[in-house]
Length: 134
Image 1 (tube, rainbow, N blue to C red):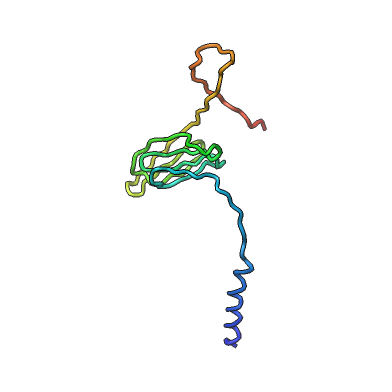
Image 2: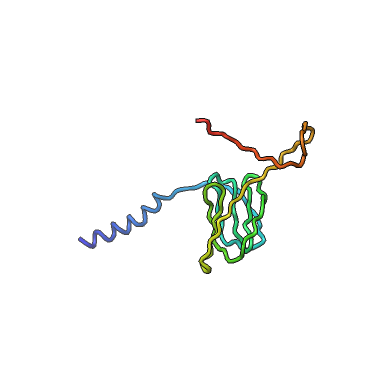
């Protein structure tokens, strides 16, 4: 009885991986030379921002523009990064038992050339968008 089971198990072990083989398509979305050791990385929920933790800084990349948007200086002992809701990054250091929560905001340049202005052209403006009208 055992002699008949061994060949059946061997045949199944050889044939099943061939049946379960799947193919994938892929494309490179972002290629960048960081210029520093990469300790960890994370993305925002929409995937358009990539946060790269390097010794001494968090680099913010735009996957849409394929460019560096900003740099946040951080202390060197941090070795892990995670994205938290509401535009916050959580940095942690395994060896020194430390965490650092960083809040950030995107700043957009708005071209006002040729537009009518009232007040100082260098004044800071905060735009609030309400886009959920349920």
